[in-house]
Image (cartoon, rainbow, N blue to C red; front, top):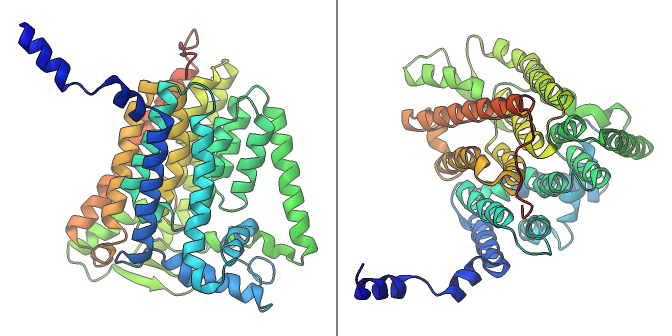
Length: 425
């Protein structure tokens, strides 16, 4: 290379100071703020009513309780666990007219706490920096649904719980158990900790004791069996249009049949598929989910009994549990994709490039979800072939993600020695 060429390459390269700035905490925080500001604006002003559940449903529930008319989960069975009512009520702090803005601010603050934990206080490692940037990109690709549902409240609990699992198992169990009593899915992460950690007894005791306390307070408040109403409410649902098992009926509608349709269920406030075999498929989702979770659990126990390292076992095991819940779920709402963030962030923070494949697949799932919801959701509701294809691709990616996770769990229990882990991770 000639001297002029060397000078040209050197002049084209970004200065070291700029590279250091972009690779530090400041740049990550700027990206975090910008993405959350964009998502908040989309929730408030974008077409498709992105915050429909928040301002059209959560607000009504919070106001009826505030006015002493009806307490969801206490006076009547509810679709959510009892602690879901806490963030819904908290968003009323500035009045009903600011409910949407307060909700977005609350979720942003929770995300900021999880982001700070992810970045840490010491030297920022390459892996944690990569995990932070991946999360920001994931949120941007997923769109407004990343903030505008009750699931968004539980994601920071899940992220921090997994990041603290090895060093602070009792705190991790507490965070994940609280998350599970807001929206059930973090309970799968509690199971992951019980299987993967050496201090699993501490996790189990904390989860059971805290759950007993939450139930006790609910019973004192007068809930009775309504505290468990979310179990029956979920079991009685039909097959939602976004559910993986709904895909065959959607393609049947695309083919021109009059026997299958998409209908709106006013009791559950969701669009569901109707037609021959739908009720059977809907009924099979619960045993199918139980079988899938049992299979993941069995693989995890096998790996743990073979003394698989936590860094090799916990991320894919947590991911496998989450994806199994998503694939066997009769609901399949777009906000479920937010669940994937926690295990992927943990995987990148601990494994770096070894988690590149699931990170890329999860990002693609987020992008497909954003295309479908909320702006052009109506096209799916009329079974437009292009949007049914997008949903099908999403389901295929989820299946591939589960396969990847199961293979890694198996490998974690088969390796003769733990994989090398960079101390800077």
